[in-house]
Length: 317
Image (cartoon, rainbow, N blue to C red; front, side, top):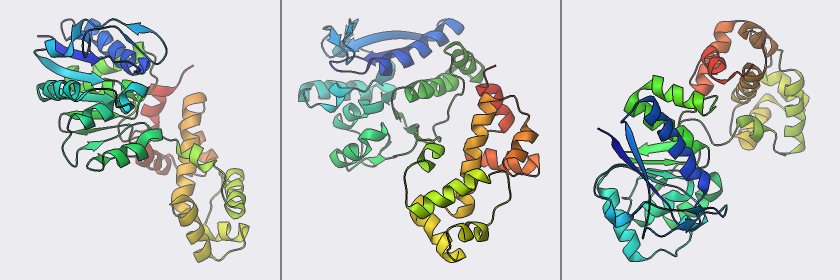
């Protein structure tokens, strides 16, 4: 029996937040016939215009939906506005109560929050709106880092492409890993990211401007990434005691020196696995690991996947 999936369209929505998940569910439906039925709805069945200017023609009004397995609510400027009436939000709340899954993409969580998410419900959204979401809805448990989170039947994602990551996870739960992987491959999603992955790359964070001392030690780490490093080495670079160096890293990065070095090496490793043909042992040696075992353990600790599995999913030749 087909699972009815509904996508709520509204004025000012982000098109990709709807089209991305819809395309993934559609591919799954082709891979496994009769798995899903996909329908675009709006509050009143009237055409709506998305942020990009394209007009969407809904098939049903929200009040006409009788049975719903999954409701997908995309984000967009419209979701953050307060143009929707109390009656419309009540209609949405009633529909949400009848759904097995309620999925918000990006700022679509503003809709679910206004429609009455319970106190303490865990949610996430795009990093740019985390603080605003916390301020407007202090009763929610807002996760500022995860790509997507689940709290019971409520799912939320960071937005845009992470909406596809979340949809692939839902397909995996419904139809199995093989189908989810097939859909990801067809959509040219090189790596299905887990919800536990962060919205920001640690390597990007490491490249942000910081104090001169931290910049100095950061450049030294880059130049010596293939060598063994100790806190004593780092302390000498910035002319500090080991204890002072340890405090510098904690205050500047939130990590100990050892944690910082490992994260930097692992981000470089992920890039090498994705863009080069170097074997894993060579990559490990180039990043200061004398054994593949130690390298594999560090990679698994940071990415929750082995280097081999990462490469097989991500490498384009």
